Length: 626
Image 1 (cartoon, rainbow, N blue to C red):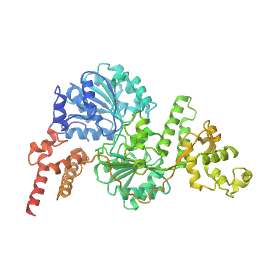
Image 2: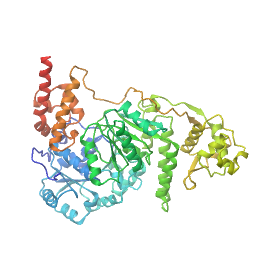
Image 3: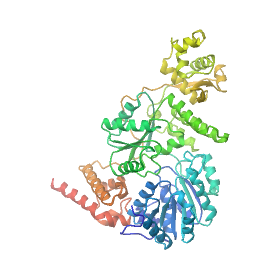
Image 4: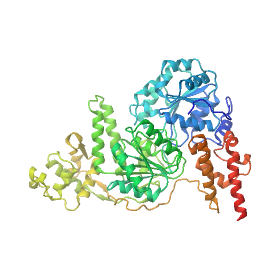
């Protein structure tokens, strides 16, 4: 893709009223939560750290001020593909936008730099590595800069879930250009991360804007992992047959295996991980963005900045490393505000595996505060998996938000409340057995002792003579592993990853053993053998319940796909599904009526109005003839 602005209509709203710019460029009548005050803050010369959920309009908070202020807005973006998609979407709206990265020819780079110097661009996207080169700093010194925008700002903080050392240099922008407004945006930053970002960016608490973390359109579900490949297929077939989705796995091998199994069962799936060639990764990502109903199975290498609005589900076959990572990854579903699912399968072995990985990452790290924080974040994630409370409430409280509800009505624990039981005696038995076996064995052996099994290891270790041998007949193997898993999540046991996953007592164990603390445990549900549809509480812009509405919607989608294909851009860049549904509901007959639809700006009216009006008119004529 060429970086310079393609021939066609463009807009110039420098110095315009922000509300008029919002309407004429982006096609919206009003700002969303906190957008207006952030825009005003930047237009007044202030700086901003913006924490907003994915899909809530963070990009507009810097795009609109960059258009209204004189000069070019410089956006720091971590991925080439992300830059290209955002620039393509802006050009569709008539915005003079471009990017500078390694995908361009030398001639294209020179032309873009000249456009920056001569004031012909409103927005320029660059990678953090390029931003701080001497050549680029010289370009900025020769140009008028409207603002700096740092996307995915959590990459700046060592406490963030995706810290990137290259981003540290970006913080120098505030030192080199102190008078230029700077905005940093992220969807995921807990209180510790927010404090660190404010400090690194030389901002104060008055520059912090937090718009909340709730994504009511997303349904959160955690299920006990038994046969994960089958469970995943049942989930997709039962809830999201034909929908676009992302499946996350921890290892490349599991990515390949899962993509193959899904494809073999008629669910078209593409693998994505760092072991594939860059050309193949790009091809798979482009197909996901531009085709309907594809599933990508990926490691965490995939997804940052993915703007595809109609991802209907995000599934995890392995635990992410923290609640921040989980929130960021699940947030890629339902960006269009329509109902979506965050589904995760989880078991005890995942906890042991993730702790081993984490301890390996921390090996030799002298920063004890950093190590403690990483362990705390993992413990919070495990607690989320094991909770019997509302999952949405647990998530929001983790990010420092106090929700005004006890039950959200759109997570598995709210839709099917979890039964709990008094597990105090079971916990005492398990802890006693761990102590008597020397705190040197994992859950498998300890539960074998409790169940009175006659295994080779039990005979070799002489554990038949222990007082805890064969005292656990009230639970089966799976039941005792559930007890162990929940006690680890509650901090009443810990996993010694250096000792091959051995279970060990903690300081808190003593109170349970002495009978000073009761333990409530949740009943494990049977893994979801069938997927029962539950009533959605999330907002949805549904098609009108009128004859022919679905046929018209599909005809509009076909036209959108055709126009997108001709321009080599993703379909949602032309119009989102929400705007197509508005066309079905209102069936405009003139360009002025078309322009009144949400999401239709002046340039898109001129560029696409006649084409879509023709589809609507043809549909109306067919209805009259029947």
